[in-house]
Length: 167
Image (cartoon, rainbow, N blue to C red; front, side, top):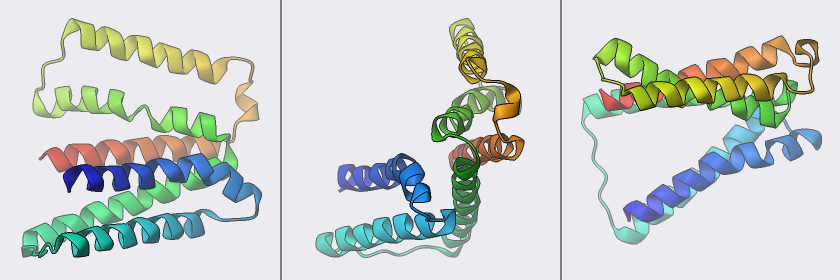
């Protein structure tokens, strides 16, 4: 069941960014995309739970934490999809996926996680690569500052989701 749930979640997460540019070009808006994607994934999860006859029971603390994570996820989804309406999806995705670097640095700063020299070098090389890709063939003026800000905010929220889930 875990593999199926992971596949459903991964598809739901990845499919939104893949179809976003097409959806927006056809006149769709970010909130409709998010609602449609999440409703589809929710239906698939309910079908999976029903097919497996699994009883779901949550404690109050789990419910509160889950609702909090849901709010962070919702805001993160809105920020990345609004960013995609303002800047190319490739740029928005590139900026959003700086989250792993943020996670590595914040885990070191906040929780004392020891980064190896190789990990520090990989973060530096990847950050340099992102800088090169964002700067190649384009001037800074060609990107919406708000779009880049929203994509970066999305990456910060993705980082927060990961770090909060680990604690």
